[in-house]
Length: 224
Image (cartoon, rainbow, N blue to C red; front, top):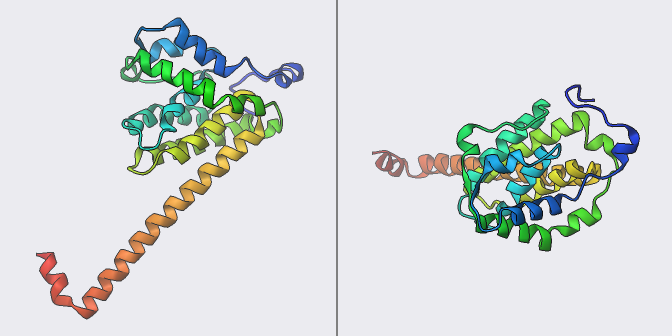
């Protein structure tokens, strides 16, 4: 069990936290029509800050080919590393905290969460707690960090973002089933990318060796 986090009594652990969808909707309503900083959002979150921040940042990344997803992945990566390290409260550099969150973006994110992600809240509940707390929570942070790295690459961001969203829901709801599902999806995605890169590298190496054997003059010409 993670020594840095207080262990809640069984009765408290059995009850799900307050609606995380409502937290996001209330945040957008409170600041309706006003741009705010990411630091303001962090200050208004409670003990769910880690999961809520990761969930909130992952939502826009679900849009395929979203411009700026690579930048959004950076704070997700930093938060995930802290989660993996067992940190109790999230920390972000001042430059990230001072980043302005546009009112339309926050409203759109809240609207998407309310309309399209409500099912995650309906289906999730406290279960398989061993997979969503303690050492498993730290492992989940590591998996989220790796998934965030793949979002930074010029490849589709939807699959790793969905995996991060599922893990975040699992941590928020203490639902080990959601956490394991998200980690499995992220692991499968990472493995697929590794295999793809390895295949491309191997194929390129094979093609180069073949060219050297068949047409060494061409390889020498391109080398110039």
